[in-house]
Image 1 (tube, one colour):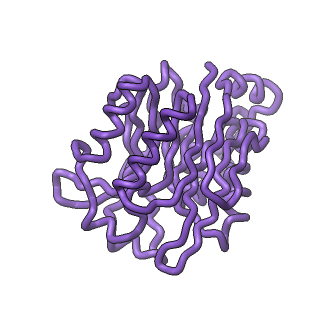
Image 2: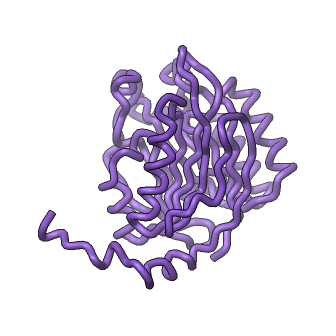
Length: 254
């Protein structure tokens, strides 16, 4: 299946500014799926206090926009659960405005204090959306854990989205891991990193789409920017017909 993916590499300023910017970009740029950064309406500026439930303003706004435009969104936000606890949650809103899936960040980045901000997620599993494509969600620091991407791939995901807030000082690692996770599993990986500065940290952008063969199809550099690329999920099968890493594994040795 062919899907046009738009990378909206923006700064996470205020909720009002970001939502207004997203609405304008969706009007100007045609795509099937619009991908936004991790914690895209709050950043790490007190996300615990600004957390919202699934029925809150941010999700409701994007669900309405998705249904109106017939487009999908992938993003991460600070989610307030029914239990009163806050999680760093990646959400997929499908083209009819429905919530297709959500994922709570499993690997919290303790040097940034995420352990005090969020409760870690307890499940990693693929979902079906966008007309039947099987995909997965990971968030930022999760990119350093190949086991999660392998699990998603073995369970049928051909596309994994990674909203992130990855600092500029480690941006070479970000680029390398996006290529590694895609090529070692024969899947598409879409990494959307923020830009801007917050609490003394400069964020590095370099949002990218990587093919199942490890080819970087688009990279947005360090500034705010938009990138649109069409992917064909049938390429996963074509790549694996030549180099099928999943089939060649020997888990009994690992």
